[in-house]
Image (cartoon, rainbow, N blue to C red; front, side):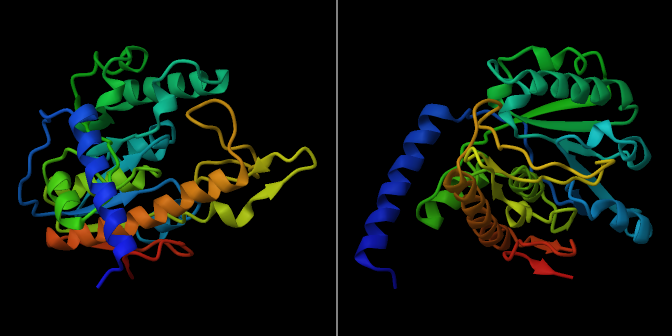
Length: 285
């Protein structure tokens, strides 16, 4: 039984969700549901991924693999040949971003276009469709199928939210790429989704320097040296304050719980096998 305050909040969130979907969502997507016979393994880019792959290589043999963000730049991309790749970071296609993001996204999409010699589905938000820079290296590769998705994050009553989720019109707020990764794997029919490399523990190493810059160390399995703490930008420019960083993490962890509830309604199990993961929403093994 929820309180009157919570009930009114849910009403407001639900109305806002409908407005967002009507104004921002695209109502024609290529995402099709089918009863997938194999299991899905989502490869996050956390520090544990290399050891998991080394120690449990046989586990990958009968799984469909989904990788995220800068995975194609590493050597593992060509070794493992994932079926799916997803990104949700707007700084990879929007204008007016810091110069380093322009270099990073050029390196990413060039690697994706040149290395992919097997069938791969690229999931990317509809908001990227109107930008051409990222497509230059992709459109020439006939192995890559581009599927656009609605990355409109909504909250509110579960009945309404889950209906919008099922129609691919919205999803839990995608403040971490793992959320749309799991969401899309659920909606295309996978019944068991395993997670590797999803520590989500960067906030444990936050700090503030003498100039009041909020710094955070974001380590990945492909980093060749110690990672220095840096500012966290807002869509490729500016910087976030401590409360903004923590709020982003709060929304991420809340989103995982919403996603798990939704997945269970689709009879999908999400199993987190990442050692040291801070995600408390999913079953662990």
